[in-house]
Image (cartoon, rainbow over all chains, first blue to last red; front, side, top):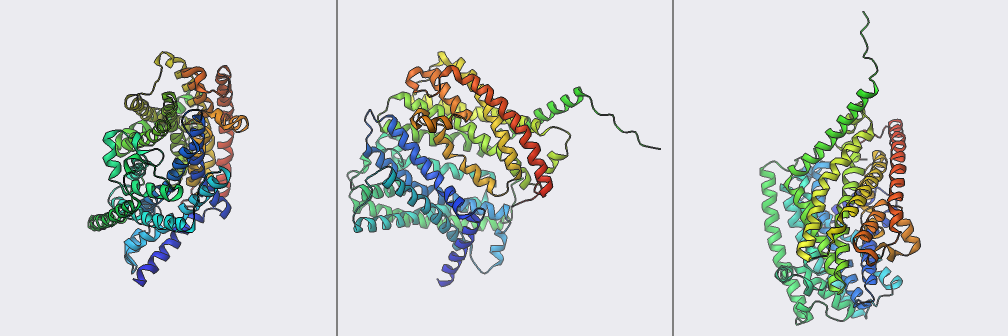
Length: 280
Length: 281
């Protein structure tokens, strides 16, 4: 176990160097916060343009929270699978993982930790921007913040395991299939109601939405930060039920992802894909 | 015996050679765009999903359906902007990474011809994606797109594309020198430009100062104008419609001139600093 943590720590440090050493710290921070701040402001202006209608500050608050925390999903999902392509084809280092006394899975979890850290910078800045520049009523007592930290941590475990599943797929597909992974993040953005209430989804899409752990995760975070439920289809569910669903789905996702990743890794090694180059 | 040197090619020969380069580069892009199924799906279905999320934002806010149409039009224009960023501006970076940039440089054709071919191919490739987004938006969300005003809107759209791809040529000259930071720079030009260009809301909402700065981008102006043509006053236009075509023509001429100068300068700098063949930097 100690060895696994050492690998995770070393891989996350390596990931940090890959992510951040191309620029000075200031430029890197600008880069890290540009996306979350831009999408926040896009939503802000979208709400403001229809403010004369039904849109209210509270409507924006729910969109803001969902959009801000969804950044973790995008960054981690895309980040882990992209790390596989970059290591395999650009840096040509994936094969060396196998010549080192480490396993690929903890290495990739370490790379996920880096993405969590970089996403956290964006999320933190977006929350501060929302609280102090846009004047949103974000906050609560110490217990709320503790619950928020717990909910975020549990959700991140779920996101990381889904990322591992995608990383497994990345081991057996060519680099140019990367946009499918990126698209999956887009599909989740739509289906889990990150920026709109679930009730406006077409009726046929709702079961897909309710099958995603992120739907419950975002609802839990919204309730924790605002004290009110948001998605109409989940109004009947208590907070405890949401915690339970999120925990169970995370365990299920971890089991499925682990099996899928192991299968993909075996196939990649059997088919000689570990040093595959497809960036021709 | 002294070997006989080929005479300097005449204007006609140079023109034919450059036109050939334009067509060849455009053809590669068009053929490649349909050859990889995952790209076709990735560039049509998935951008559509993100666009759909923003349509549902307005639906959730109970905004008039016209706002949903703004998003659909913006979603189509985003396809072009992303194409300019990732397949035009950063293309020389990819070529450098794959060791092919020097092949471009040893050809006797203008870099502008290669980029022009890239632009034409990119427009053709992206148009199929943009049509899918427009058609999907119209059919699935029933957004109102008045087809009786489509012709003048299409004219402005073509002018906008010309100016946007000319801007892409300038950016490609910068990416000629950049290394790994090119990737991050291209990312920086995504969401912030989605915001500045008002892809999902009328750019007038940004206010006079920020709106004026954003209007220096041809895609901002073009989208503002197209919305005004299609929806009149309800489009919350920012720049008077009559001003937009001449401004776009002026931007096009300026960008082409700057691209020509920037390409020559960056290529010279790249050669002096030995960065044109530097991979992974």
